[in-house]
Image (cartoon, rainbow, N blue to C red):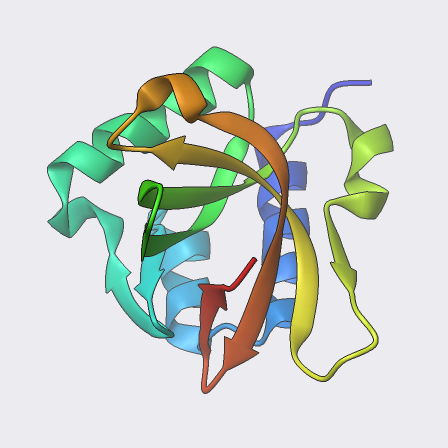
Length: 139
C-alpha cells in the first residue's frame, strides 16, 4: 500500500527523533522540506551543496522514496553519501531503523552513493551512531 507525503513526513520525523537528531533539523525538515547531511556528527543543510541536493532529488524521484537525512564519509573505497530513506510502502517501515543492543547505535535502511564509483552505489543497511544531535555512519 502506498503512502502520502504527509504520512512519510510523520514517519521520518518519528525516525529522526528516535535517532536523536537535533530538534531544529527536524523542524526544518517538517516546516521547510530541508534535509540535513552530517559529517562526523556535524549537521549542514543539503541545499548548501547543490550536487548532493540534486542527487537526493534524483533518488527520491527514481525510487519513489523520501530522504530524511544523509551522512558523508571518506573511505578507502570511495567518497560515500548514505541517503537514509523511507520507502513508499508502509509494510516496509517497521524495519527502516532498528536499535542495536549498544547505546546510540542503529541499523538504518539507506541508498549509498559512492561518488567515486557510481557502479558501487546500492540500497542496503548501514550502521549509524548518534551523538549530540548528529549522526555518523560507522559501518
